[in-house]
Length: 379
Image 1 (tube, rainbow, N blue to C red):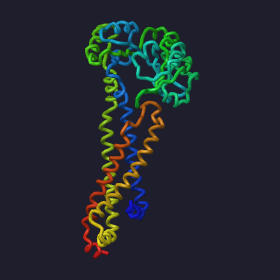
Image 2 (cartoon, rainbow, N blue to C red):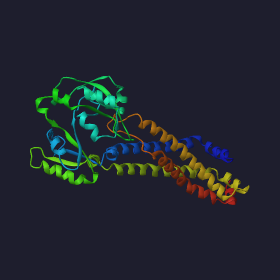
Image 3 (cartoon, helix red, strand yellow):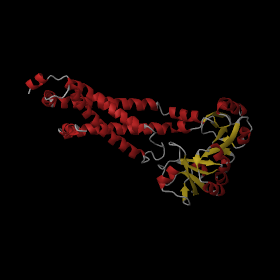
Image 4 (cartoon, rainbow, N blue to C red):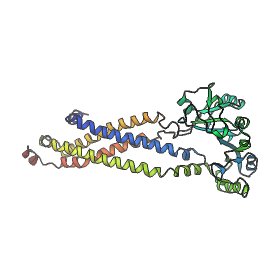
């Protein structure tokens, strides 16, 4: 700590240059935090999806399945519980207000998705009200909804043009980071009673919870065989495989994050290295004097490295803090549930510190090898 004033004095010598270098680290680590949150959000469906659940859908997402399939799937050995969900696709106030809306059967849903935290009284109120809905905590926060509110939705064209009204009966939460608590669950019975006749007796897809996750492949094949050559054939896969396939359609996110991050930090490495090299050249005589009065080569090496590391740490801390604040603002409006995975801040701090040390290494070695006689001769 006794050398801190000397360190700060060197950094204050060119305040604008130091500020810009700190800002470069802040921008780089801000981007790092946002990219990791984006990656985590896009992978959320894979990380949170249950490997002990199967998703049974038609040959495409547009093909609905008959409701009687539920009983036939339930009879298959190894199947513990079965539930179904149907996409609603209503509009709240403005088409830009997108959020996931599923019509479900309350008697079946929680047995398949036990990981959600739901108040028992709220769930009972939802099950007792045909117009009742359960909304995720993130969704409720976005629109300021609370239990007891009445929510009007304009239905998709295939369900008519009359507004549908729903009553918020409860708010659910996810048990783990990244859980999707931005959904809107309504009663399937309400859709059946008020929808057109051609929409009755069909569901969007089935969700099957297995007694043993190791039997997933065999049971998936059995389900598809059960409905082969029927008017509504099925395609069954694990929920995590479905999420991974959906993510794959969006491109190689892992590579994109790695490529952008690598380019940013390589550029930052060059900028910071150049800045420290200029700083060392400007202080050639001062470094020579320090050596002349007895300071060792290692001290000079450590001094330059400490300057570079301090710039990196301060800039990185600012960038990571800003990224954390921005991630909490729900920038994607629920389309991608952004969140910062555990350990991201530690990894970001380590990357910033490592970049700072590497960037300052060559200038520091140059300062350490500086000849006192040659340096003073050039003054």
